[in-house]
Image (cartoon, rainbow, N blue to C red; front, side):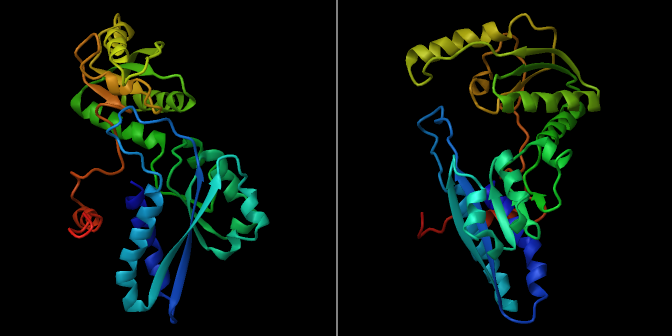
Length: 294
């Protein structure tokens, strides 16, 4: 995902670079923080700590291939902050004014703090992480360009497909975390927009044990049917669990045999390898490792 959105950045910057007469090097700041993330539910899932940066660097390298015709080059400069370090620390270092473009791999509050700094008022900031809807409405800023879809966009994409399938009765199960509630709110908006009926909204109340242990797995097998029983008649089980606390285990374990959609099961996404239109085949091909690298 990070690689995909950064390639779009280069596509936007390329016409700007091509208009210059002299050879130009475009320095792009990649800014992120060392945010704490929960451990993966499975040991088989590899944790990536530099996915965004590697995607940015590879995309810049690919952009240079076309840039050679116009004597243009792209350079990605990474900047990492600790989770508790203030964005204003970069301002104190007189650091941000050097970069006309910033790729912001930041959470909402940090993204807003970056966008309102005096040094970034003439900077184009590309948001590649934050899905918050208010950044596109109430707190929309003119120097922030959103490459990642918002929660409302994801929910609408899902709602359009469910309407096409005529699965209009939704049983919504939401998690406890703020992000889970925000996506549930987006789903409620989508239901109203496309004429779906949320027959019930239910909080997932159970606390799963260690899911890597046998006892934890048995606990899940027991909890999921209990958590989903007694719901009114519904076509789909819609889950809002961005924190991945329980949603992965709803499939094939719910009390009623219904499709699971939302953050798990069938989920909306900005990119998928099966999508082959609009140059996607080439975009996917360039990121495949060569045989020498494999």
